[in-house]
Image 1 (cartoon, each protein chain N blue to C red):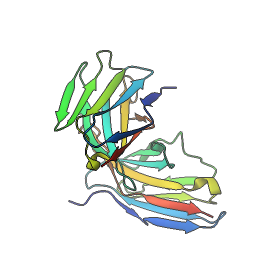
Image 2: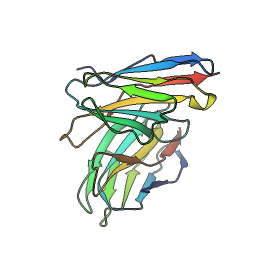
Image 3: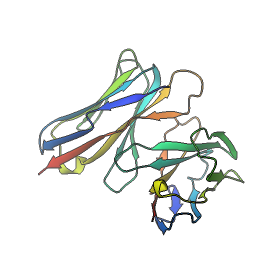
Image 4: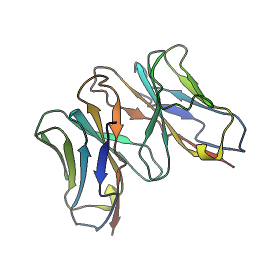
Length: 114
Length: 113
């Protein structure tokens, strides 16, 4: 069974440009998470979806970040416009409610904003 | 707000030495999870502890959950170079939204061969 799939793995853009990340969770996982991880830090939750509903987006910088999970399966995270401080690894994770909420992570997208 | 602290932040050991990382929460946790992240990799689930005072072992790794369910530890016996990485604890709070994990900042382990 495939794990959490993220693309692209790497992205280099200039500041003020838009960027989008895609995530396909493990089949059957109804909960999807987007995290940002800076070097030497732990994952920081940006948004959590239960099916297609965003149930926790309190840490999402809504002026430039947006996310969607239209059909309750795959999800897209967008930044527009990107700033230098957005350089980080963006991790997607999924879990199945009732299965101890163990989170399974994708390989992440490493974003460099120049 | 709720915080989960981990110490130490970094640890260098010689191969064969033991290693312990500690996790402390400002509030009571319903459970605690441990993840390992290899350099350049992503967090991978290791174990979950739920019961007060629970102890679980995975080969050379021993995980403990405190009696008050506010602290936890991970102990590695006789470290190997394959143990290199950052170990994160993450806890679910004891009330309200049970599915929000509060992550520690991690302990980075380096093992000298």
